[in-house]
Length: 340
Ligand code: NAD
Ligand code: UD1
Image (cartoon, rainbow, N blue to C red):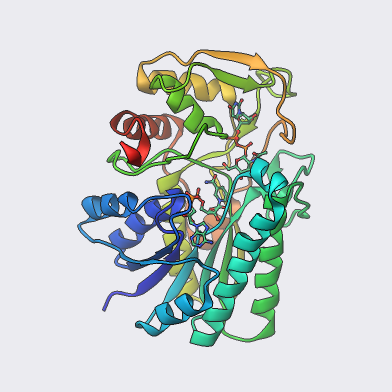
């Protein structure tokens, strides 16, 4: 029998790609999502790619009775917890909503897992937990000091999970700190579908290239970086999805433990380098203006990716040209996302 993995937030951007990677690795995803930031269409597309329609429970991750009935419905080997809210700016305006969905959501999930005796959990954390560390290459042992409510929810959840793992034997928990997930499945059938005007670089660049937005604003040309623009570690979302499968396999094959891993490429790319790569991949111009720095940004950061390589034997396979090509294929085939 194929092992079943509960995927909270499995209809979302990272979760839908993880569903594909899991199915292709012999797992059966069972998705729980409230569709607050996604649509059921992403799961239909997962089925088109893999030939397997993930089972779906439409529910809020804070709903204890819905969680209990999911865990009663049959054996669940592990949980991947993607469900949550992720917009930094919005989290400063609606902090309690972020604490409710992210922190209380994870609390409800962990309690339901405890009741059901399911103790294998992979959690989506973020490099945002490091805050503004003042160095560029970020190692897992750095002190965390997040600088916004979204980041604080992730850091509080990480601490809650550490307390849980220490409190009773048997928990296998991975806290995965993603750097900047971008790109799409190579089929162009699933990808990132942000609601409204995108906040993040890659979806904004794609929408400019496809003609949905006029011009990109480059936030700052005077950063202390080689070309003056911000530098980040962009990880292809399928590399990220494969990293989840590698993590799950590792957790299930080793004694109970609490694992904390950066998932990134270990390399930095500037905004201008990304624009040029996207222009190459799409054959379209990406007009831009350099404007003031965005409040809350830092100059440069990238992952120290050595621990994940050492522990999991996993490293990213795809580069900037791959992720621009795949993002463009998705954008071109779905100029209005899943909606049209
Ligand atoms: P997403 O918004 O595309 O996916 C999140 C999914 O969770 C959506 O399908 C949404 O409908 C669902 N959801 C939200 N609140 C829920 C709730 N209370 N109950 C049930 N379902 C709920 O986001 P994503 O980019 O796929 O991110 C997935 C996870 O990874 C999030 O936890 C996010 O914080 C984390 N993360 C994302 C990034 C990124 O850049 N995408 C970076 C670092 C960490
Ligand atoms: C942002 C979040 C971070 C989250 C990550 C997920 C903030 C402050 N941080 O990170 O918590 O984990 O997304 O991917 O929001 N840029 C432009 N023009 C744009 C958009 C971005 O020049 O229109 C620049 C930014 O200044 C930055 C780079 O592009 O240098 C990447 O920005 P973005 O995609 O928003 O990611 P982060 O800021 O790294």
